[in-house]
Structure formats: C-alpha cells, structure tokens
Image 1 (tube, one colour):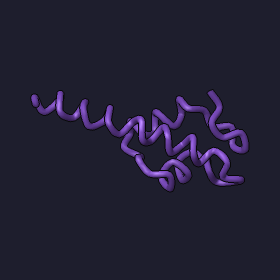
Image 2: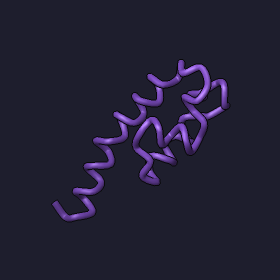
Image 3: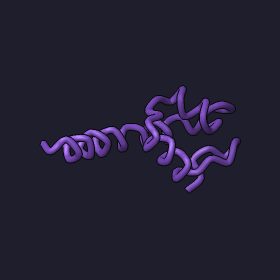
Image 4: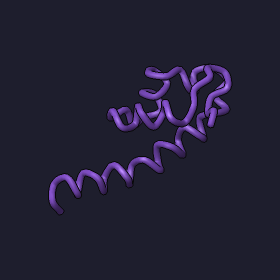
Length: 66
C-alpha cells in the first residue's frame, strides 16, 4: 500500500526501516522521504510506527527468553 504519494513510499519500505531500528517520524522521513512534502501521510506513518512498537518489544522479550 502506498503511504506517501508525493515520494512514492509504500508501507513495506517503512516496515523495513522500522525493522532496521528507525522508529521516529523524523528517521522515516530521513530514510525514505515519507512525510517530507505535504505531510498528509504523517498520520499513516505514525500509525505504522505505533503498530510496530509492541511487535518490536514482544520480539525482544522472546529473544531474551522472557
């Protein structure tokens, strides 16, 4: 799904960056260009970040043996 029409950034690209440890809107903007033009996609990018954080935390717990 295209998240940022201005810079043609899709959700998969953003998810890949999240998995690499980029977990802020500023970081996503720097890495992908999303949210860098009109800003209409900022809410979508933020939702992807918020959805990713619990998954990231639970995968860390599993890796640590908790």
